[in-house]
Image (tube, rainbow, N blue to C red; front, side, top):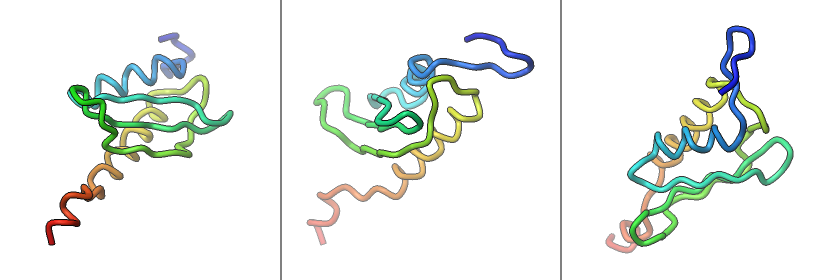
Length: 91
């Protein structure tokens, strides 16, 4: 990370690494889908099965820690609201 004033800035690849660490043991993949948005994917590391994909998350090529935290919170919020398809079939 590079220090800019009082704020820590990180590049998009470094921000994705922070998110991989945060969501471990689940797998995390992040890719920019436009100049200012990204697609986040959480997956089962053993099977490779996608658990959740979210597109259109605001991001930048260089972000501060608060931006990364907002992305993590958005993914966690979606994860909490997620109902696996198997649970829908069981009823």
